[in-house]
Amino acid sequence: MKILQTGDLHLGKLFYERSLIPDQKHMLSQIVQEIKNEAASGSPYKALLVCGDVYDRSVPPAEAVELFSNFLAELKNASPELHIFIISGNHDSANRLSYAAELLDFQRIHIRTSFENIETPVVVDGTSFYLFPFCQPSAGRTGENEADAPNAQEAFIAKIASAARKNSGAEQSVLLAHLFTAGSVTSESERGVWGTAEQVDSKVFSEFSYTALGHLHRFQKAGKNVYYAGSPLAYSFDENSAEKCLLRVELEPDTGPVVTKIPVTPLHKVVRLSGTFADFYEGDRFLEFKDDFVEINCQDDTIVENPVLLLKSHFSNLLSFRQEKAIIEETSSDMAARRDFIFQAKGNIQEHFALFLSDLQQDGADEEELKLFKKLLDEKEKDETA
Image (cartoon, rainbow, N blue to C red):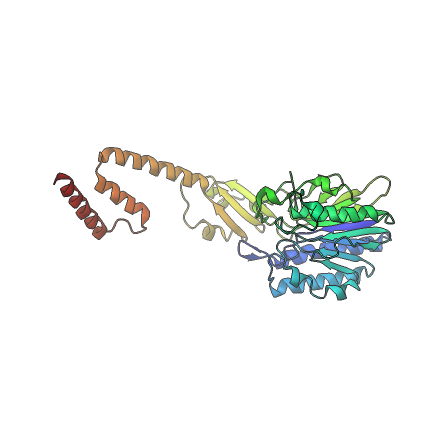
């Protein structure tokens, strides 16, 4: 059996206030094309796995819902026999995503967003597919024998694994889940809430022939026959060098699954660049990135005023301009000057207070506040000498 794995689509996401709908439409079209290509080759995919975070927020914008609806229609048009498995992630609204789920089951579109009957698989050509949507680690236990489980996620997975063991009639078993496996590599764009409490030991997946995971945005192997496909687009600048792909999974009963990465080509690459302001403003060193989503790490020692406005004509999608080096230099210089001032003031508390107000208020020290402080200081001195 051949299946295609993806997840963490985050449809409707804003990237530095920039809508990614055109980029996501371009990405989804590549998934459809992959399904079409394999169907035409005579070796079609039996299933597409979407491992959570279909949308970026619980109330997605209308254009994101329309985009996903059109995507499902195109998939079914390309391969009517394709089974599509979808689970909810931590960004999704379970109730909204599961709308018309019972009806869509008849179209081989299987959406699972609750924990009811999670031990009951969808069987496709002898392979059992178990769907485990996102679960808060603090969720209630599911049975009296699960008290020792580190969190509810592991307790639920143990319940599914027990069902898989008993289902001896199935040739193989596949688990879809949206969670954080301990020891995996994270990205800036992921939403973590519970710290290490949300991490799951990959050993809990040992009962399944293959485990398809979502939640983490980098492609990675998280255990034996356990894989994250990662998000098909980069959603943070720290993912600029991460490979973005779909996973073709060929289930082989005797030798185990064969996993192949299918690259995804973005409409706009996400890149981090470093150099001086002059490198970007005057030269052509970075000309190849002019249409990409760009973050610039400026190496100048002094602050550049209005850099984004100045560079917009060179980089139409410049989203972030960082000047840490100049800020550190300026901060260090200010701290040195302040130390000198305090030392030279030799304990003059009024001058210290004026400096404090200047740091605190954008308009500097107010004369009335200084007069009031002096009055209070004089009264204090009188009390001490009385």
